[in-house]
Image (cartoon, rainbow, N blue to C red):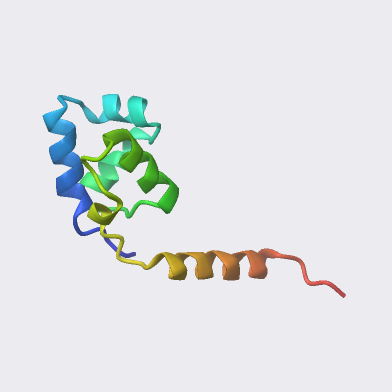
Length: 92
């Protein structure tokens, strides 16, 4: 599984500067507490939608580029499309 490079330290730093616990940040930005914890522990990479929630919440203090997604967006989309195609029932 790819790991995020910059998000953990930047996310933790911004959260602490604002005096928020992980649970408080979770409630304010709409991202599950456990998910945020995994980001800070470098155990999970954010999906694009989740990344955008964080960018919107931190309103300029966190940029999309700060998230340093290790998988290019086009590759994420391609894998999603391939997964949907495999899951679709074969037509006769």
